[in-house]
Length: 207
Length: 288
Image (cartoon, rainbow over all chains, first blue to last red; front, side, top):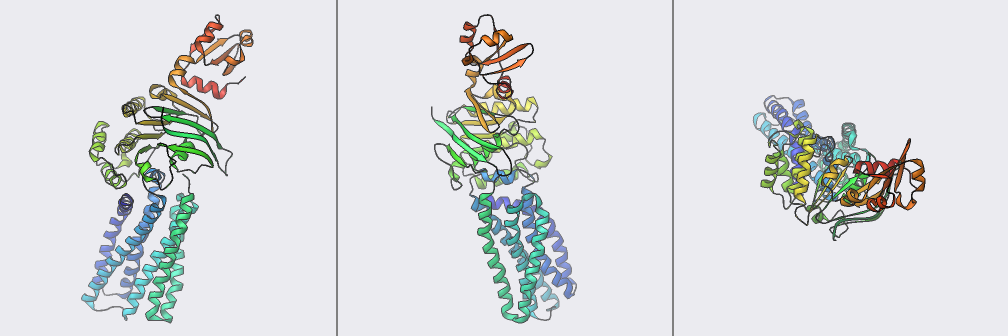
């Protein structure tokens, strides 16, 4: 697993460092400029962006024979999939932390810009939900339908994730306090359920 | 003689094509190099895929180090070094990063040996792999394959597309590797001259079927091509003919018992035959 983590980190870091610079600049703007729209935009982009980077990194591996080569290394197929899910989850956490720091900074500088604290949690939940759902759809899909269509599947996964997350987001309107937890729990459940499905697909995959 | 690798009647059929591996059987003894020869699409990569579990076989048995290797048998894969044709690693890595990553995969990863290999092959440690030439990427892949102290090297078309100097360098590495008697190499190629230089055994595959396995010494010393006229050809004992080709006005006949045949047919010339010619005769020639 150590090798897989190192491998995943190197693959994601390639693009994540550029994204981090972009997010850093955007974070300063979001903290300094007092606009609610920018703040909201920053929360969603920050969390989802890191997850997109993590997902896109899987695609980079298939530009060479590395995806096939990995199967000849002393790792189990199950561990390869497990590492991808953990990687997806960890980068989402990185996004949450990064956005969280900027949000706190913004609060210290200007006070709470978004009217209610539940709205902020709602946005965090929406970002987390989109990230989890995108991973849940994307990972099994690329192994099922082909690694050569990464970009198309990434877009499809993201759009589906946004669609499902938007439906779940309505729960927050109905039950504001509990809605955030329900939304994250549902997304997490789908993320967890997609893991055995991805393993099942990958175990049959031939290269 | 103990075998490091054994394939027994391995079959694999693909639903989307007519191609199939048809009872592929061969073995690789410890301390030897086996050349796996076949034209493009003959089934070399599929066979290697079955050995390495990147392709699942339909039937038959494959034993590595005397055991069937399942997905969970990571200990067995510690002992195998693999080199594929082309880009084995993502181009955005440097050899230095590659070593850091491989150290996480292999318990026996030897960074100093890897650096020594890079130095021997004159590969830059900090240059991105995407800037490497084809020869350099193959040398890098071989360096990786050697740096965890494997016992078995499996190379799929590792020398194709390389210039003769690089090929020669790489072949020397394989010869060095099998100096240790518990080391072996399986090398697939359609460049038969390479295999003639290094292989102890050669297995020929055609249309998914092994058409011949023999030791190189046997091929060199016992195999020959007789050039005979039509009347001479008709007088030959059919048991002496492995394959023949009609090349007007003469017949070329592949035989496997050179000395005996020369004694038997004194007025027919039997020439030395290369592995390439043997393969051509077996594939393109007619059989009695």
